[in-house]
Image (cartoon, rainbow, N blue to C red; front, side):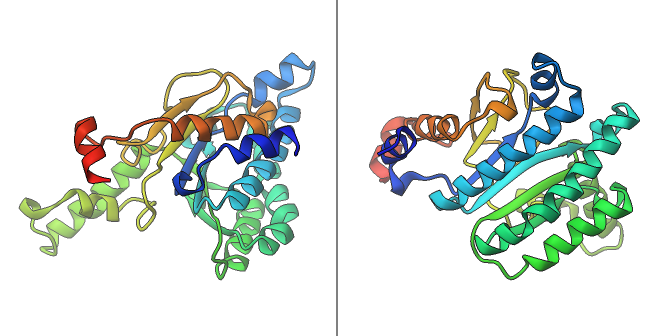
Length: 253
């Protein structure tokens, strides 16, 4: 048994999270620490996405949501943005055969129309090609931020109210959730952020209200399968109370 297999054997298969979200941080710092340019770090990070997606699928996780490109990232130097756009299109095209073989469904979340035409068409092709898949759902957050998402939801609800289709007094949390880009997707059980930072960075702010948060100092390109399993083990050792007392949780089991 390999060290990874031994660590996986420690997991409780009945407590695997349904939905894991990730903030993939540290590509640029990884590149700098190795004497490379930032684009090399992003390229190396693609390999981590490949490994994380495969392991999630193998473990039976149903939803994996990756923060691939935020609306704030558009403010980065044009050369870096262009490189990221190229890598996103190239990576999804390269990974498509294996995604199909592993029954992985691609879903795109965010203001996708802002993505340049060539990578956008590759993303659309991958999304359409995997639409029939019933295994892991890989949600790619591109040109996404939570404040943008919530603002768009408010606009939609306000328009419906102005048209008399919605009674403002009857708007519920469920109504808000149904107008988010993640409508129909269960909220994350676990949010993992790599790179040593301890903030959420405008990511899934509504959806992670009761998610468990896990921060690791590992930079994204260095985030190993063992690191991922360690995060899942940590998750399984927590008691999720959702506002209840510990005794109430135990009595409801």
